[in-house]
Image (cartoon, rainbow, N blue to C red; front, side):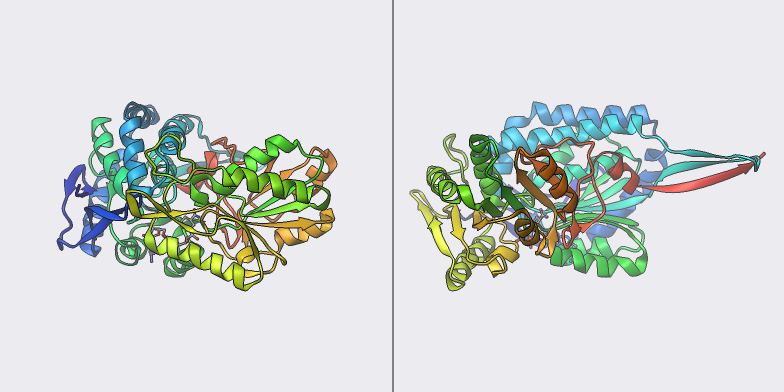
Length: 479
Ligand code: TXE
């Protein structure tokens, strides 16, 4: 199936007629082509967005809200179709796409459709000066949204929905590795009555299509989720043009387990936080630290549970671990398993590529647990972004805090303990944008979402996202 760009409400071939293969990770086969859009396509998308902006930015909040909620409902009505498309494009189990990815994409539109009706700005009474200041929150204009392959529609819509709700017009690019659901979204937007040109979706490589978006002098804000080195590149390009930037980047998140936790709950959640979506979630707890007194017990129980996970075809109901997203990514993850061995790590389970009968060329890998000797080894410091976790014991709170913070990343951290004082102490000191205590990836869309250090700049979610996608203008009136 061939994918097209969605520009000015219609589906268009790339102007230069350049195409890329789209792979199905479950069997390694090419199953369609996608535009490799050039600067010309990005310019055409920009022009459509710029033309639509004067009218869209003046649409009443009720009307914007109504359209966004209609998109949300249409996604829900097409759940099965979207879930299957996401699974085929990404390799994730259909069951996961059906319960997490697509429902969340629908929630993103519903949430921001509602949030915009509650979004307000401040006024400041300049007492004694006979003046009042009020703040306008005005849409920026045309904004760029660039998203990755791990949670394709989920993250694509997480950016687009607040951008549109705030009154901007959008030029968006999904990952070239997983473009399908973004393509299907265009149709839904037309059916929901989103005016032409308000949302434009261009497909293609990051280095050409994405680069054209970030370089475009009139695209005044970029919201990006992806790798840390790409984020650094985008910051370098965008900074001299003074673009607003929101960067959600990589993670190497600690999962810290104290002996006083609710053990069974912790064990089940840790299996999920390690391997959900084949470990390809920036929030996965890829470094597990366990208090000494329960270390051996945890190691045995955890490995037992991980061995029971079923690696299988994404469409099978019984599959826990589907295919990794691409051949180069599989290669990268496998390389880290080799590095772990060279560094003296012990592979407690997994470590091998899996050849599924009938799908021998699919990108399958066993869930892998590595016991490491030092928290400073490469597999403990660098983002692997696959079904691979490291395991280490710790003695004291100070020691584990030090190890948890001693990485370049700072996206999220998980803490398992029932000690309130320790919870407070550690949550305050963990260098992360998000701390989960006795849970993982429990999301409330009103909360600020993002990381510190090399995990990014800025926050998404709730009113933070609406603030990002608007410019504050202060008006001072003397009376
Ligand atoms: O991401 P890229 P990649 C991490 C993970 C992974 C690594 C690389 O460790 O192994 O990043 O993944 C677009 N200008 N994460 O290479 O390249 C690109 O087309 C503008 C963590 O796939 O960062 C895609 O749409 N855009 C992450 C998007 O950026 C550019 C999720 C992300 O791709 C561009 C994914 C450019 N010059 C990977 N170059 C997370 N935080 O969740 C690329 N892109």
